Length: 103
Image (tube, rainbow, N blue to C red; front, side, top):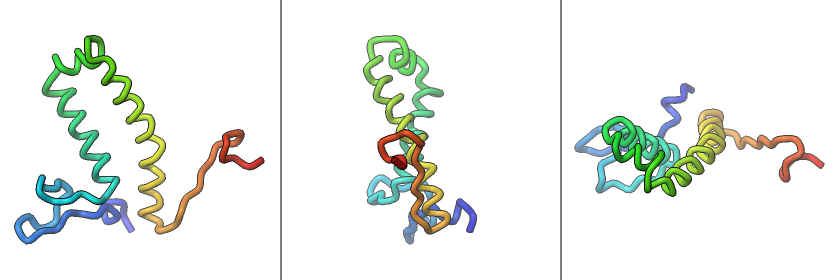
């Protein structure tokens, strides 16, 4: 199974199959929610450079901390979700010496 077949596409009579979900639809796939959130952030970075400058270095730097935390969580969680979806098996990966690691 390829990775693109593991994504749950939105299906509707009006739009067919699509990864971009209309506003009136309920999004239930966590991978799609994370990808759309990152896509929205990329739009802000590219097309609203003054706003992004305020987030990076200006008065909105408290939002920067939230974005950095979200991306660090995303980097750790999404690969696990994707591998579990593609393989159909539960994945347990821990770092040695961590709280979840073997004693």
